[in-house]
Amino acid sequence: MKRAFSLLLAALMTLSLSGCGYNAIQSADEQVTAAWSEVLNQYQRRADLIPNLVASVKGYASHEQQVLTDVTNARARVGSINLTADQLDDPQQVQRFQQAQGELGSALSRLLAVSENYPQLKADALFRDLLAQLEGTENRIAVARNRYVQSVQQYNVLVRQFPGVITAKLFGYSPKANFSVENEAEVSRPPAVDFGTSAPAPAPAR
Image: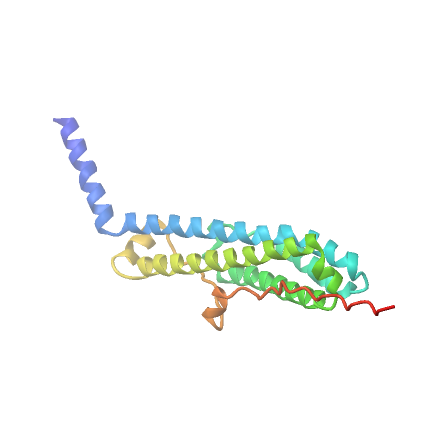
């Protein structure tokens, strides 16, 4: 009899939690955490490519010191920011992370622009391979960001609307900060990477 009562009580509690939106909120929170983990993985993948990119450019354009330094410094700033899933409810922390990643993206764009002036660099097999990896990584970043944006939107709806808003307050769930972009289309459009190789001018006939 006691066991049956315990099972009935457990079933009622489960139904109660489901009815008040707790299970949905918890599931959405886990989805946000997983999406954020993928965002971090792809940004780290990009950061890991940078030392070799800088070294490749330096081999052909060592006097472009300012551009090389800017990329290296931007990568260092990104590495100094550790934003965990538990901090995603802090808009300032998320904005700081996003700003650092944006600065790194801008520095990389300048580095690629410089490479256009060096046909031998563009023809280098290692450099071209790194560019291919960078383009693939930028695409993965865009996909991961979009999934994170969607996950946060779904989660925030649950914790802001009734009855989820009551459950969220009872269990300590709060809205999470999202990426803020002036044009959402930019999130899905990775920087263009030019794989064209300028052919060297033919040698004059003798």
